[in-house]
Image (cartoon, rainbow, N blue to C red; front, side, top):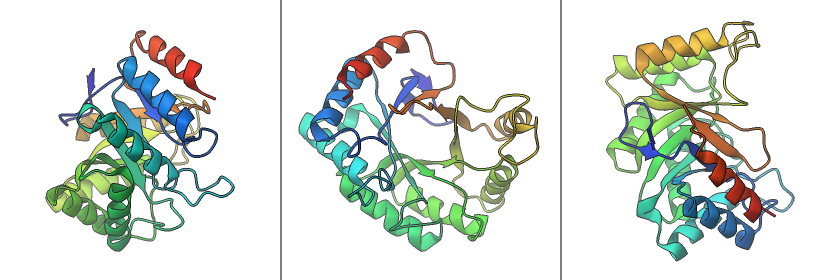
Length: 245
């Protein structure tokens, strides 16, 4: 198991993404994938309140609902780490304090749980001051609705700004960062728009602030890796692949 940043979250290095649940994987197929993943030792499940709103007939939140039903029927809530996200849902767009509060309550209802283990800002919201977003996340954590908060799809400068605001105002800060693809690569365009600087920028943030990191896989199965994924995760990948539709 790996520990995420400075948290006490001990997670399997291969995180199972739930963006296909309720889309290309119906409830029985999703349950089969979840059973295979946890049966092979996995304990880290990632979803979002927007998944899969892009699919015909879906509103968003279907993935959380399926995961919540699986947790209830299998009695596995205490055995797994649940990560979900706010900010891209059509029902709750952006990261204003009111949006974060209402979106979190909706996610908790769908997941059938009293807390979210890792709650991501799904993407940056330039229209909302960083201080307001971080204060809203702080209230969630201090209120017991989320154990930790994290960032996804932030540029390095905006991420550094959010972390600085949290420190200045003595607020709960981002404990992890999720980036697309296989993580930042030297020589590739950076998320902040400056070619070649991406890896150096995020390395500097990690060294300064101590946030953990993960990156998403381009695979439709949406299996996600945390840092230093060992070769033992191959068994989990194969198990989930056999169970996928």
